[in-house]
Length: 225
Image (tube, rainbow, N blue to C red; front, top):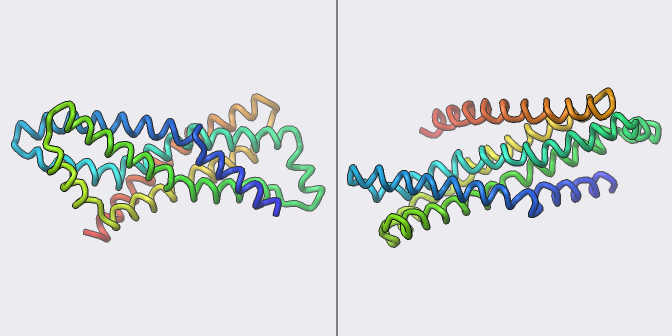
């Protein structure tokens, strides 16, 4: 029951407005910029009709899961590391052991499960924001044809693409949460130690996300096509 309460609290933290809004704003900006640049270049070569398909593929499979994970690592992951680290240096985690409660199971597992679950959800919202901003940028700013743009976008939204993006996001969320909890549990030396744990968590999370994105993309391209 205690772990369930921690899980629900972690879900609210990872999926709350304070976590979702920055992702939506950033992904909207990226989608809009990509569309503005893309329509200009593609119009030069007469392949403007390919813009929506390209934007959809890149956003769903790569941009949305990767950028969402980076944003959540910077916000939610650091909060996890800081919170657990503070409990570690104030010996609250030791008190849990005295009461017969496994600190890793009570503090880390619910947070790992929550971030693994919520990262694909937030990535979906971010991806939708990117595509909406891309549509607005291409149609309203550069005068691209709305009908063909929407038709091409709809054609490219596939179950496989959505599942690939969701799977990547879940893996990235899992990695971020594990790294954050590990460094939080290892925090030593008062507030300075907590700060070092938070810094190490975000740096390692960014590196892991980049490496995982490269490996998963190469693996999926090899398996699928």
